[in-house]
Length: 548
Image: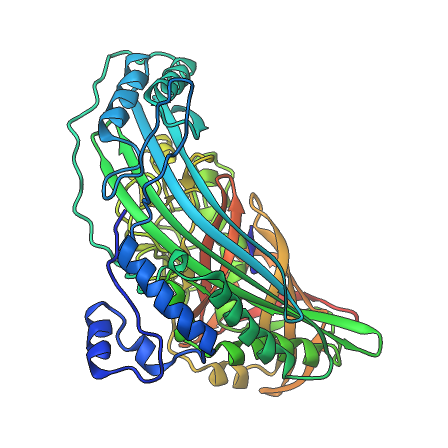
């Protein structure tokens, strides 16, 4: 369910309006491509002073999250120092733990080591309500015996604790027929696609709050009907190390930041709520890529307009669904059914349908975790496999599922680098990353003009879906009637009702305006960041729930 709501980078960013040419060249060399040179958030004097402090912190730490400090103590005074460049867990200890699992009957073992710094700030009507930061540190241990698996986790990284956990898990799965040994360690050479200029953990909370104040100002400036503005900010810097008994040793660093603006408008005793949640796999430089004030006006405009609108009509009709978060229908009603988590159990409407027609010929869809700095991207999946684009549907034909290692064994299929998890306390399974319907060749205006009568769903909100059947319903948070090929009056309270696999076959027009938006997706392996997206599409017939 999606809610809308270590590769170290030695890089810096100059966040000033008077960027010198030398600075621009430096930014370009480091992959910024003029981001900071073109759009810079308007910083207060306090923020500019804070920049100098942040830069000093960057120089001291060189963007390495592995600060020297004690991770834990046990009765024997064992401790692990966060090494300057090496793994949080000594590879020799990791090798011994993997051996302990194999010695006790497992035929495959894996360690997932995680260190994460995170920040959450909440602001209501311009005042900071809460600010929380934290550190998550621990290891997940997974073992296989055939297709039987067991998983455990701990934040005690001593060799005795980890070895005991690995051995206990291995014994619980039953003994392998032949004794195995951990293979010689190897580290794949994987290119980092996600350059970071200013890591969030190098920036003071006051600067993050200043960004939130800009959003509050923008949201408040739209209309007197706006009675409440809630701004939320989150960021995380996650470093993972993965070891397995096939000899794999690999690490990755994932940086994410996101801003959510929620506006409430009131008119004649009626209230409407709208929100917008831009997020990215960039650092703080993300807020240089768009105008924060202007972006924050979007939910206020939406709420102010919808609160004065009449209720939507009900019935079957053509529905034009706008780009961006409109892709949540594909994500929920179709994407989850394409994950091997459900396919391997035969609990998906798409089970056993590879190379069969499952959608209209104008529909193609992808899951792509390689998009640079996208919200759902990573260099490797959470089993340590290098990520790659995955074409799910090509011109209506089902081409692939999203497959992890364990479910791939059950399905006799290779992993598609789709294993993901919330953190080390969850075992990985197949999940979406950046999933979207690909662009067609029609202008959105052409799609509207070709629709005699129907509903234009400009923005979608929450909903529900039954994964086994694909049945769904989603609220339309911003809707308009289409009459004789023109968008006319705004309407509120509409709900889209259908079945995902049937909706795919009813898409008869696909636009060229592909865009993606961000959400948090919940499933078997916890909550993970995921992009949804699509161009403007038309569904020839959908059930629209309304009042009139």
